[in-house]
Image 1 (tube, rainbow, N blue to C red):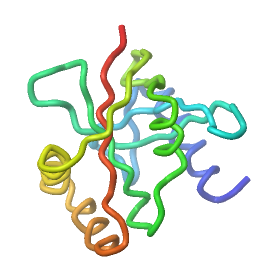
Image 2: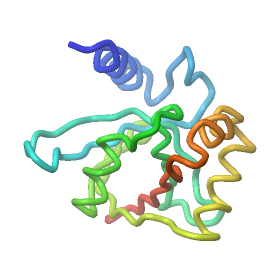
Image 3: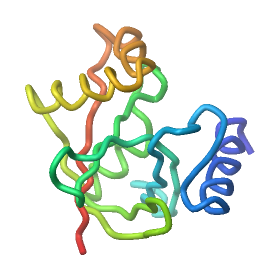
Image 4: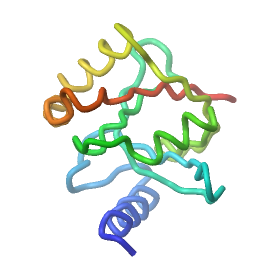
Amino acid sequence: MSEAADWNTKVIAEFRANEGKVGGAFEGAPLLLVHHRGRKTGREHVSPMMYLPHDAEPDIVYVFASKAGAPTDPDWYRNLTAAGEGTVERGTATYRVTVRELTGAERDRVYAEQARLYPGFAEYERQTAGIRTIPVLELRSAV
């Protein structure tokens, strides 16, 4: 198992054991688990990630394909956008979501808010400047 996969496995176990709360790097941050199917393999994957709740719609959250400032997009981003849907675990709730990629000013506004709340995201954006724009996805409850 790769170091990243091992780290994810530990975060997922802690999330599930503590009703969606974890310590370490994610302590106090809003975290959810996103279930997505591999585009090529069809295998289900689960990825922990921070999210930003919509300011007025409780059924909408935003996630950020930052990959910690890496020059390439994460696989989960490509899987979710290809499928247009997925499942999330948020706290103790599990539900289906539809996926929409934000663009332009809407994307920039949401990303700027995440970077204001969590400065690491501003650093990720600096690291990817001129290489890629970090995608922002809207996950809307499909229930």
